[in-house]
Image (tube, rainbow, N blue to C red):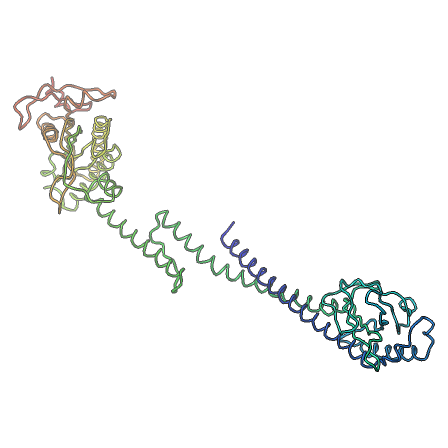
Length: 490
């Protein structure tokens, strides 16, 4: 699920919950105060009516036969007029009647005067009132129900007030009933208004949630997209978020991160022009600067030098010399790196390559020989290019030797280089120099040849003397030597 959808759901849930709670609270409070208002009005009706009734006249009503007496008819008329006067828009008294005063507290309540016109609803004198209100009616005091109650005619909010004769004795009580449906009818518009308010609030909350989720999810989406592009290597990425809020500060942080990565990439690119890729990766992986130290290990060293380049360059324009060297080194370096070689250094028109350092390489001899063969093949294409422009062909001499050497960071703490030193390096250099005198383009030491596992046509070049060594060195060449070299071997 998208963040925007989650945010929208949260906003809507909060809006619905808060509005729902507010509506329930408002309805509960309104219902309570409205119920209290009804109780007060019903009690007032009972008290007011009781004040209008003659208690002495009411005491004369004893049996059903008294319903045709002048006293009954007068009381009936007074009750009816009081009832009709209290059938208003704010309160509607359904029933207004009187009880007889009981002779004993344990006696059941009996009706006295009932002014109802509908015979089905009329209660006659001495009819028993079946109280289902959950409380005992105290006719001697004014009372009103604390909750909606029920009797044989329905559910009501009822109140009763005492009737007393001229001597102050209890002669009966007036009872007023207001149907609970009146309360429900009064609450219904309030409930509808509450539902309408909630619907309106929910609609507004929906639009607000959509607006806020878009406002929040847009910068989040932009940040996610920017970080993904940076992760894919696009360090030119910039976030357009501005402002002093969290998104603005996060956008600035992403821009600073991209700028730092751009700077790091620039340093890495520039640094790679001066050190080998292996050394560069080692520094980046370790996350710390190299220290001056060296290790003894077996390596294979290759020296390669253009023959007679100094003499040839005297007949060429400087721009052409640079162009030829650039093409030569571009191709040679590509071959070296492809065969896991470490380009140790450039020496004028020559190069020194180390195989087996800084990473171990069990096939270092094979990689060194393949590098030499591909360099020789690449020079043929370069010579054809030179001949097409009226320039002489070029050739190289390559010397390869394998053995133990000290490999590591050599120099001072302020300036060092990763290189190899020792007799192994010197002998490889001497073999490269010997290619000029023996007219071979590749010379390989016996130690390297013995470690080769590939199928190569090797030709032994009898023990040769190299500069700096008293003992002769057994060397080999690999197919393709010049005719002069073949004659020398014969």
